[in-house]
Image (cartoon, rainbow, N blue to C red):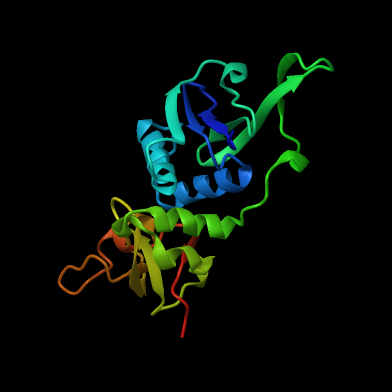
Length: 220
C-alpha cells in the first residue's frame, strides 16, 4: 500500500522511487523547488539526483519511503499508483503507466490522461512544505513568496533576491544600471551592492541581474 511513483530521465539510466506522495501535485512542486534552489538537473549529472533525494528525504524523514537504483524498462519500473515520470531538466516530459487489455494483461505503456492526475495538494503549499523540511541554512524562506517582475521594470533602490554560490538567496539593493563599459556587455542592466571595490559595484559582473525576470522584496 502506498502512493507510489518512479522518476527517471529520457536516458532511463536511474530511477528514483517514492513510496508516498507520488502524485503530480507533489512531483511538479518538487521539481520547481529543486529548480528554485538552483540545483543542476539529473539529466545533467549525478548531483541532480542527489539533491532531489536530499529534498525528498528531508520531507519524508525516517529511513524508508525513498529509494534509488538502476533503471531497467518502463514496464518493470512501473510501481503502480502514479507510474513513471520522465523528466527533462526540471520539467515533466512524460508521465507513463502500464496499459492493459480487457483481460488485464499488460500490453505496453501509455501516458496519463489529465483526469487521472492527482490534484489534492496545492502547489505553493507543497513548495513551502519542502522548504520547511530543509535545514534552516538551506531554506528559501521569504524568497518563495517574493513577487517576480521583469528585470526591465526594476527600479533604483529595489531590494532584489540574488542567488548565493551554493544554495539560497540574499537580498541586495539596486544601486545603479550598467554603463557603456559594463562587464559582459550588460549595458542598462541593474546592479546591486554585493561585491564592492573602492566604493564601486559596477565593476563586477556578478553584481548584475542578467535574467529576464527577478524576485524583489515588496516595495514600500
